[in-house]
Amino acid sequence: MGNDHLVITLLGSGGGVGKAVLALLEQVLQDAQAPLHQSLTDCTIHCIDAKPLQQDTFTPYCPQLASHLVLHQFDLQDTARFKRHLANTATALVIDASWADTLAMLDCCNELAVAYVNTALESEEVDRLNELEGFTLIERYSRFIAGRNSYTNLKAIVGSGMNPGVVQWFALSLMQEQPDKLPLACYIVETDSSFYADRTLLQPKTVYSTWSPECYLDEAILNYPMYVSHHQALFLYEAVYAQTFIIRLGELSFEGCLMPHEEVLSLGERFPFETGFIYKVNEVTTAILQNHLDDADELWDWNHKLLDPRDAELEGSDLVGVLLVYDDHERYLYNVMDNKQIYAAYGTNATYFQVACGLYGGICSLLLGEVPNGVHWVDELSDAGIKAYGDYIAYFMKPLVRGTNAGSDGLLLQRLRK
Image 1 (cartoon, helix red, strand yellow):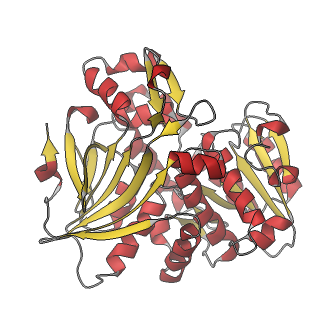
Image 2 (cartoon, helix red, strand yellow; image 1 turned 180 degrees about the vertical axis):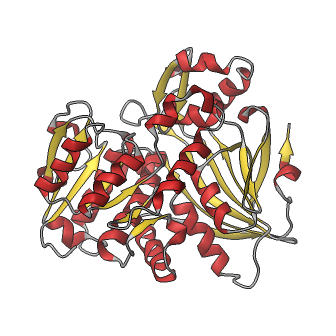
Image 3 (cartoon, helix red, strand yellow; image 1 turned 90 degrees about the vertical axis):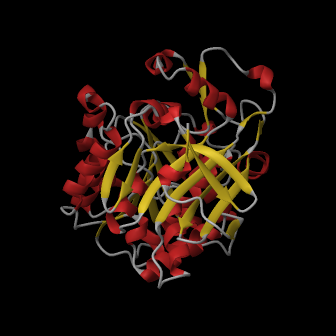
């Protein structure tokens, strides 16, 4: 990455994650101490979206960075055009915040030796196959694993959002504090209380989410609850919202649902302990899902509404972290962000800003660090790479709360509440 003039291509720049990344990079541009500041002072960011967007779409999020943006509109399924774009612009890094097929994007970047970072695995073919209903996440993961070793001509980090991404760093960071003792379990935990401050805005037959409602429903009603134990993915033959699992983080406790997620598979592939993702969303959405256990497919036909603070004030916060379970105690590390504070500073919601912090860690690692060729999860970076990633995300991700529970609630099925 030796060019003085940095060229980045951002896919899906008009979406929630894309705008949040630009808002974060705006702060980097204004802060001489921030990692990557110097590179951004002389950069071009090419923004590719399927729908046409105007420059003033981005000005509220990044007024100074906006002059560095060049907007493009085309479908990323046109990979020949995408490759021409990468070559013609001399792009050094692709930031993928879109729904484009992950393997197709990696094919293009690998051919041209362009670095790549994204937040999640996407597969257009898997999404089209009805027979995979219930198991789409693990099928996307399996196809990615089958192909990943062929990408040797680029440096890439996949799943560098909040989860997956930051939570994998959380897990390794906590484990390094007790290196002689492997935990019995590692649970990814999240409780997101974000909702409109004015409840009269609540509309009938509407599903609300702080991130892509379609992707949320994919995990919440289309897939079965999944966890991994001794490197084996296990599924519970039950609706995700038919059961909850207790989580305690010091004085804080909540009951969340077991959701399928990429970092559960990547951590579970590497370590023998039990791992799963336990997630609680706002009470309104939770009640809707619980009241439609027998007719969940109906929710696909409802209105899907993103909780955007630019539409109306959001209250509540998003807490994301990990809980390590040992035989006689538990240890946790989490970040919590308040919607009102994040909107005032960055113009987005707490969830999207947490995702942007994870992407920033991946961006800095690829442009400033020594990431070897190949495709990596965050937890597969070297010890030096893990430390650097943690330093990058901690620049904006505050606070990081560490603590210990004196006892333990046990493994997953011991935490089950019907």
